[in-house]
Image (cartoon, rainbow, N blue to C red; front, side, top):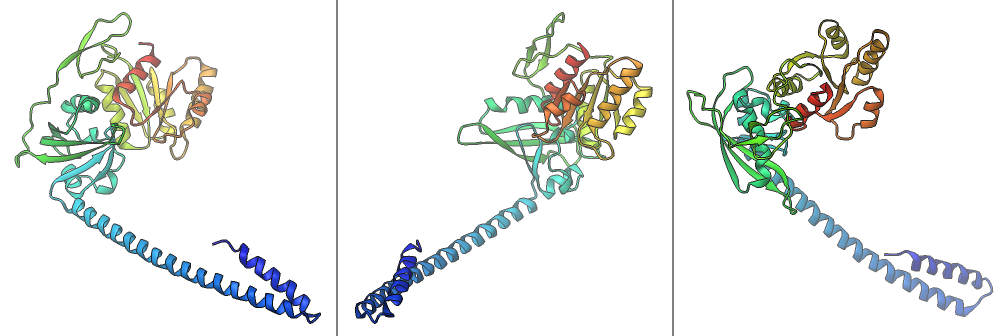
Length: 345
């Protein structure tokens, strides 16, 4: 409620008090009327305050019920005997329960934001990426049979139940995945087979067949290409290495900018792939040092900056000396295309 009427009445009171000094009887009557109006306004304010308190109490109860419901379903999610997780459309893990953490032999807290492909057996990774790419054309729950590869363990057969979650516009928001161990003996199933389609070749190359439903421009082979990958996160190094080696690329890894500079003395890559944000020397510092060395010694290594942050300044990376900029969880095809382009294939 506006306090303007209150201010007006107080102004009237002050005016009438001044008039009282002249013993004006009419002024007393106006003061009584003003005070009566103030009393009415006060009572209305009290009623409104009581209504607000009731509303706040209702909201508090609803919030407590919602919180209790959240923890109830959260406990069910965590205690479920079914290995269960959710991912985004790129296959990056958003949530994981205890059962999937035990199945993958990885603590729950370390699974968030990790690429799920890291825990797919190597022979099934191409099919897994293709399945992800085909989901926009699918509806309902998909059932996949693929081999799971736990950390520091042997691959075993599993059945994946993949439910697609879409937003009101029909776009995929996330994936809900239940993973079922098919055998106590952990026998490996045959690699997932998908229809083969033609992939458009680069200039001067012949068409090749590959798994997938959409045509992409990929080189036929990158055998002999050499790439240095620099990142302080072991899982990301493994993710990138797996993608590149699947196309015949030779990969060396470094865990820091200093290690990368030492590796460059022994390993002469065709392309450098470097994380931007690293402790004890970031990617910007590394590329500036490399470009300074090249200015004195000659030569040039094409370089791509990678980051886990969507708001990373692309222009800043290019000005520092990188030729390209890519998100860490970009689709594997993007990685291969980028490296091939920078290497001139």
